[in-house]
Image (cartoon, rainbow, N blue to C red; front, side, top):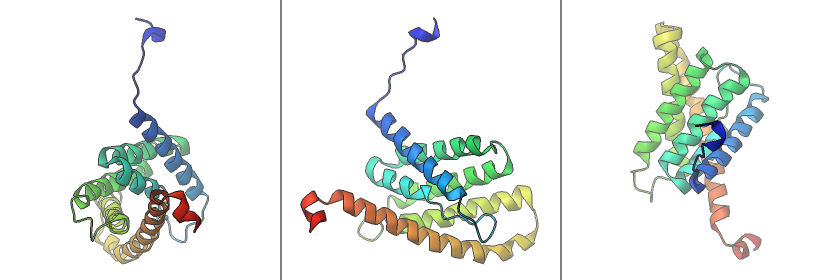
Amino acid sequence: MTASTIKLATTTEDHHIAKMAAVALGLTVLESAIPSPLPGVKPGLANIITLIVLARYGWRAAAWVSLLRVVAGSLLFGNFLAPGFFLSLSGALCSLAMLAVSMHLPQRWFGALTHSILAAFAHIAGQMMVVYLWLIPHSGIAYLIPIFATAALVFGTVNGLIAARFMDNVAKPDTERQA
């Protein structure tokens, strides 16, 4: 069988995932141009896309978008299989696990904002575990937890508010948006 005879069947969902992963990757590239006050502290703009995908298409699609962004971003920046890749991957996996759990919380009280904050804390926890267990196995790492937790709270809140606002604007009919 030659390569020209192999046809891959793609679905509409595959196309949505690819488009959203591309947008998330674009936000990752944009974010890399923003100077960081502390190494490792980033706003996580691509997580806005993950939250939107989670709300619209479900956890499976959000996981694909997040993991594709991590792998494609590491290939684009040249750090695939480097420590930065594993930090990003561990953060993404932990935040996806948290999103899987938080999706089952009552929607009346838990929405994009709380999902974002919980995912941001899980992301930092995953990264801190990799740092401690692999890169810097020293108890002094614990002194950084308040700094990273504060960053997670701030950026998780901002990203959650942006995602919620975007989803509210898209959900409203055109007549309500113009008023």
